Image 1 (cartoon, rainbow, N blue to C red):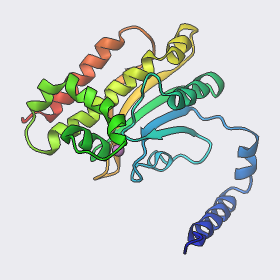
Image 2 (image 1 turned 90 degrees about the vertical axis):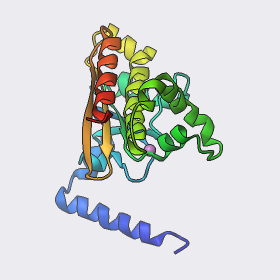
Image 3 (image 1 turned 45 degrees about the vertical axis):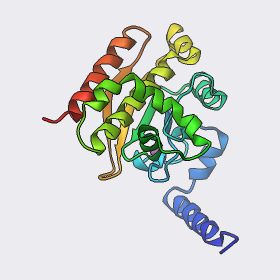
Image 4 (image 1 turned 90 degrees about the horizontal axis):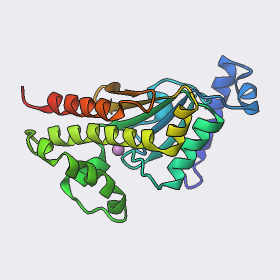
Length: 220
Ligand code: CO
């Protein structure tokens, strides 16, 4: 099936099903989108944003890249963020990582993959910052799982520090930044305890969430 006719057939069946369930579904979306949420997640095919929070088209604005990284100068991510905050006026920004992330694993193990190694340097920066705590964790999975969480917390902080979010808070816009992680084993999301609704006390919230993450992964 070189022409991907199977996917096009699946699309027709999906569209027909949506119309059967709600005849005005597509007509209602044509005019405008008004999502309440911006999702910043990993490109991993096993972590499809809309599906895992069970939201239909129109309710989630999405940016995905390898290892859900928010780089201060990434014009792509910043453009998504600015449009979501200033134009769509989303109320929540969710940075979502996942366990078993190939990007985080490669960063942690220093496995060369190619050009993407340069992108994953950002995750290695996170690993370097918490090296002591991560080295204290036992086993193969615990340090990587913990790093996946610490990476979410770090990237959520980057979101908070953008001029876009800082300006929104300064003008009193209702905007909350969240850090979540997804577990491929059971399909469940976990809130990592960083919930930021203003510029005050960000560092303390981040530090508490980091401590909680490291504690959860320590041998009991
Ligand atoms: Co991933």
